[in-house]
Structures are given as C-alpha cells and as structure tokens.
Length: 160
Image (cartoon, helix red, strand yellow):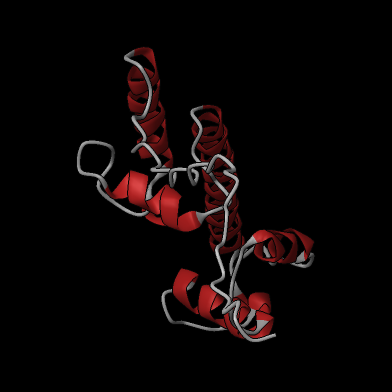
C-alpha cells in the first residue's frame, strides 16, 4: 500500500527558506514535477519516498547557503582587519579578481574557495599586508613672508 503524504508543512518550510525569484506556487509545481519524474505537479500525488527525498534535498541546499553566508562573513571580516574598505564592492571585487588571490568576483566564490582565500589573505598579512599605493598629497602653498612695500606715486609739484 502506498503511503500518502498528508502534512506538507515540512515542504513549505523548506521552500520558504530558499531564495527564489518566482511565485511560490510555480516553485512548488516545478519541484514536484522534477521529483516525480514528470508524473505530476501536485504535492498530494507524490509518494512518501519522493516527498522525503525532495524535502531533504531542499534542506541540504538551504544549509549550503547558510554555510556560504558564514564563509563570506569571515572573509569580509578578515579583509576589514587588513584595511580593505568592504563597504565598497568595487574594491572587494578588485582584490578578489587578482589571479594571485582567487581570480573571480566575490559573489562567485564558493564556500571552499572562501577558506582558501582566507588562507592566502592571512599569508599576505604575515608578509606585511597589502601594499597600498601612496596617496599623493598636494604640497601646501608656501607661506610668503610679509614684506613692507613702498609705493611711489609721482606727482607734479609745480601747479597746485
């Protein structure tokens, strides 16, 4: 006898945790269609095995996102300690794009690559840190010594 799924709270809690940009019902139908091998797009028609496999896979994906979020946070914190302005994504990406660092934008770095990136950043820090280009400050204007000036105005003296 086929075990029917009667409580779908686990499924809806799992997809709620996903970051998706489509309608919830569309997401549900797509997931059910995928996990039933195209047989149906209704949660009620899923077998217990299909339902459990679907919920476990979604949970695993959500946990992976949490891990990535933690790894990104650790990397940004280390960059801040090194003096990188992490509020400027252009600077963060410029650092990450360097082939000797990681070779890609920060957004595309995986959790495993974040651990590798932090290892490289710590090594750079031990060797003296990131060398910044010296900022050229304009020279202050030279102060002129005040001199007493005498102005001679020629006047004709004969006609008054």
